[in-house]
Length: 136
Image (cartoon, rainbow, N blue to C red):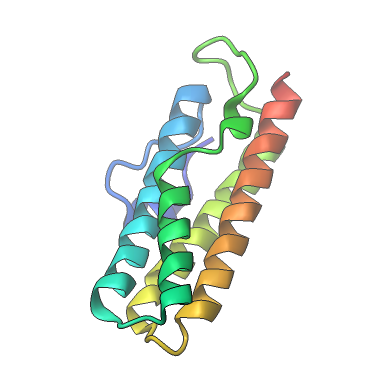
């Protein structure tokens, strides 16, 4: 499946979802996009210690793929199930749109934004796991 235009416009060389390898690379690109936005919040805002810890926890989460999302064994290049990939693409668009809002986040709204980021990551992970289960 081709990547949505919203993702190609925001992330240079976004690979799309045509096969397992592209899906994995797309996952990395979206997590990195959100991670950069989160890191910018941490750099410009003086956060309460508990919020700083939550930010650090979410930053650590975006550094690594959810191992459960890619736990099945597949043949390299195998096509992903189309309906599941659409769900991943929708979750990716929502995550990128969330990341784009990060520039407006201040110390007072950082905790709510982190809640949204965790929700977006949870939705992405669930969509990725659903694709993996359909391929198993």
